[in-house]
View 1 (tube, rainbow, N blue to C red):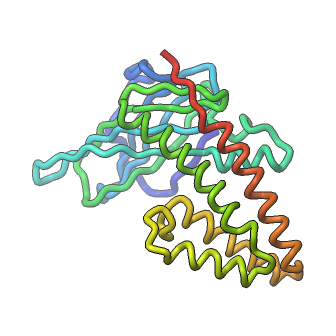
View 2: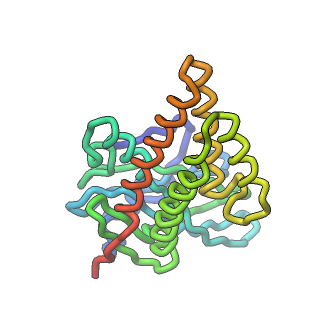
Length: 236
């Protein structure tokens, strides 16, 4: 599987696929945009497993001589979950062995050069590898946080008997001053997404009860899949 980026880019770095063999993926090459505000990192899966998430360690240098180290990550599990719930195979949407994946990272200001490697990967079989402890823990913590957010969203919404009650429950949660409930949190994002879907379902002619039932069923399926893939066994 390979994504494409339409930005005009220049090749700024070429890294051997075996340069960072501590995990089952490596950076194949990096292409920066001409304005220096972003770069596309091409990742190659060097393992015999299917990758569901990865973290990129990036080191940027800037024209003024300053430098910055950041960790970027991408979790494909929601896409893989949607594929499985639609009757397909989860691995069909994962990064397959030998395949590449283009991942665009952006910077706070134009950079003159970027170096990157893979800090961690998670696989669809429930295992993971990390060459950077912080990057790897970020992947596993995010996966666990997402699983908790889905279960919390179910608890908040399952007592509603109408879309209006669901909206009231969501608003109470989002503006409760609870840190994990704010709109930018994992839970806040799930609640807003479900509320948006509920309103659209009703506009399309579904009854409140049918819309609530369908969306809660969807949430429960997502929660089950995400929870099962949040228990990662780290490979030695």
